[in-house]
Amino acid sequence: MATITNKRLCAGTLSGTEATLYTTPASTTTIVKSITISNISAAAVTAFLALNDVSVMYGVGLAAGETITISPFDQIIHAGETIKGYSDTASAITYYISGKEEV
Image (tube, rainbow, N blue to C red; front, side):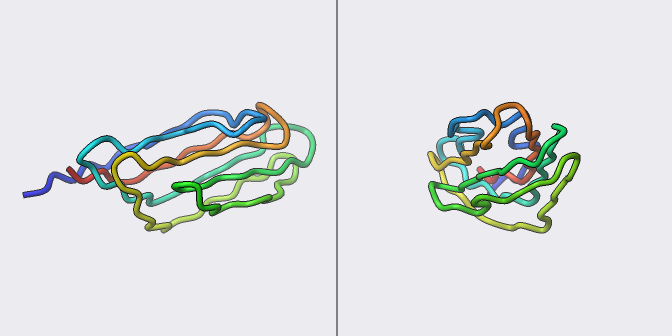
């Protein structure tokens, strides 16, 4: 019988170059439930996020101080697959991504 755990998958600040934010563990399926990104800078910035190298937020513009939440998101990524992201301005966007892991 599968065990399902609700959890914060990843949280932090996007860099100016693409980076892996989360990798689904071996023998696990992850359901991404919610994505929140916030522009903490005083200028407009652009965010990029991908699940398993498929863009889900490509060139999303955020005004200074703006926050975007996508929920329910309900996308599945399998063992070894990733969530990647970056911003056109390093350290300007924070992110919080939650979901469920099924083992």
